Length: 81
Length: 180
Image (cartoon, rainbow over all chains, first blue to last red; front, side):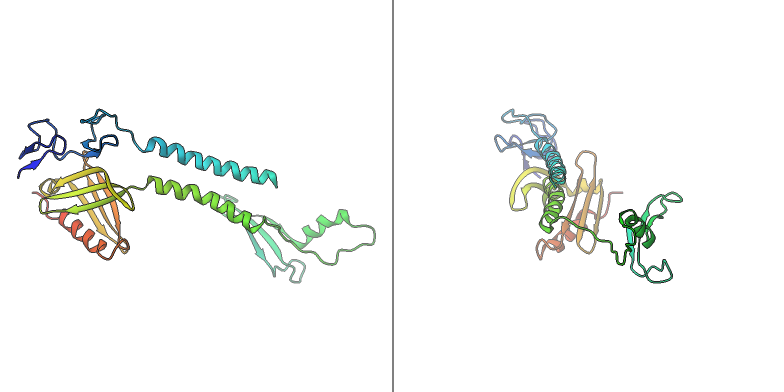
C-alpha cells in the first residue's frame, strides 16, 4: 500500500522512504517552530533545523518551585503566629 | 497518635485519660504506649501553682487550633502544588484504529486536539509486539511494550458515552492473535 512519507511527502510502498531515507512509521513530533512533522529520534527538526526542547525543561523547575514556595509560606505563617 | 478515653478508670471512678501511642515501641513497627495524660499527671502539673489550702476542684484538657480559614489555606497550599504537578505531568492521548494502522496522537491538552507527537503501528507490526490490554470498572488500559515505540495509557469510561466501547474495541483489535 502506497503512503506519503510524513517527513518529505514522497510516496512510497516501503518502510524506508526512498527520497529521504527515514522510516515512514517512525515516532514523530510536531516541530514547535515550523509545525511540520519531524522524527523524534533526531535532535533537530528535519525541515527548519530547530532543536527539540522538552516541556520538562520548564515543568520540573516550576513544580519544584511550587513545592518550595508552599513549604516556605507554611514556615513563615508558623513563625508569624 | 493520641487516643482519647473519656471513661478511663484511673482512681476507681471515671476520670478520663489521653493515651499517646508511637510506632516502633517495644518492637519493630509495633504501636506501643508512650505516655498517658492521667488525672494524676494533670493534678501534678497544677500542684506547684496551688497555694496553701487551695485545692483543684475541676480540670480539663483542651486545644486551640488556628483559624479555620488559615487551616483551609494551609491545606490548599499543600494540595495545590501536587494537583498542579499532576496536571503538568499528565499526557493526553487520542487513539485511532483504521483497517491497517493503530494511530496515537499525543495532543496538547484536554481541550486542544493539536498533536505534539504522532506514533503509529501497522496491525501487522503489532502482531509481533507485546501488547497488554485490560478493562476494569473505570479504565481500559493499553500497554505496548516495545523498545522503539513504547506506549502506555488508560482510557476513562466517563470521558464520553462512546469512549469505553471504542477503547475496548481498539484494545481487542490490537491484542488479537499473535504471529506464530
